[in-house]
Amino acid sequence: MPLSKPRLPSATRLISALTALALLGSAGHAAANPKIVIDVRTGRVLEHEDAFRKWYPASLTKLMTAYVTFKALKSGRLSLDSEVVMSKRAADQPPSKMYFKPGSRLTMDSALKILLVKSANDVAVAVGETVGGSLDQFVAMMNSEAQRLGMTSTHFINPHGLPGQGQYTTARDLAILALQLKREFPEFAGYFSLEGINTGKKNYPNFNMLIGRFEGADGMKTGFICAAGFNQVSSATRNGRTVISVVLGSDSLAGRADDSADLLQKGLTIAANRGVPLASLAPYGDTATINDLSDQICNREAAKVRSEGRDDAGRMVVHSPYIKEMARPPVYSFAGLIPGPETVAGNKGGEEIANVPIPLPRPTF
Image 1: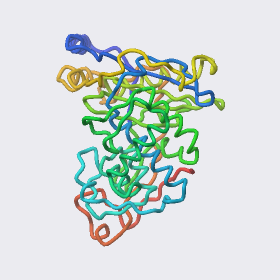
Image 2: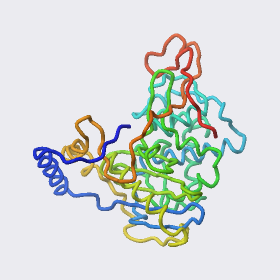
Image 3: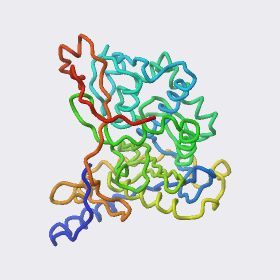
Image 4: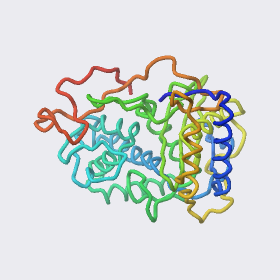
């Protein structure tokens, strides 16, 4: 994903940007911008802000979808070669999606890559149906795991994160989930750090702008809906030390990358034994209201601000000094459909696999 460092704009562009920012400010910024950073080894909270504010999880929900799936894989009930079949219900999900037709098949390995890189909602439902036996049973498994892990302010209604009544979480709870993913499933960590995927026809870069650009970045997941803003759970490892950050409610793709990079950098450079254990962090602030940022994020003025955040070449302008331009093209890992009669003949409605897949490097898990 192309990035650019800020440079001095022309007077006209500067006035335009300032005007747009003023309009956005008059509409009201988010009531909160939850953040938290934790040390993985100690489990201590190094810094936090509005960590108990209830938030729509958006595609960060897919972290729990992955968690439940990893448990099924680790138990031996399923394998990475297990087939995931697209049902009509899965295929009918709203975008973001792969547009695979009902009956299309892919391995669990490919499904997880698509889930965590492309964040496809249709694949999320297909994975849930495969792991849970039914979508309702899988959602029940998600909520059961959330309760067991101590995610006391979290509830899920689907495996992809599209908003609805009864779907909410907090920065603190997402930090718990990310920490457990790191601790319980190190063998699957590579799924979170993929630079991109290739379906046999098309490349999809990871939406996480820190991978390959922030020193030590190694995952994990991004998410966006109007109601939640731009969100990101990130992790980074340097000199044997790993920290996890959660950023909710940023105002743009570049904004959440800047916020995440700055928080990770702070976490990696301060004492690991400061703060309190994550499980001991006491609730504070408004813990009842589910924040809805739709008016602030999805309006004309906000879109204007985001458009001003690109340079003349259309590259997103980042401001964090800790994000560097990638010095090489991304590595794309194969994640496509299993060849069959419908794919060999040509599935015009989706991103079907070619007869001979493009050989691309695969991560080692």
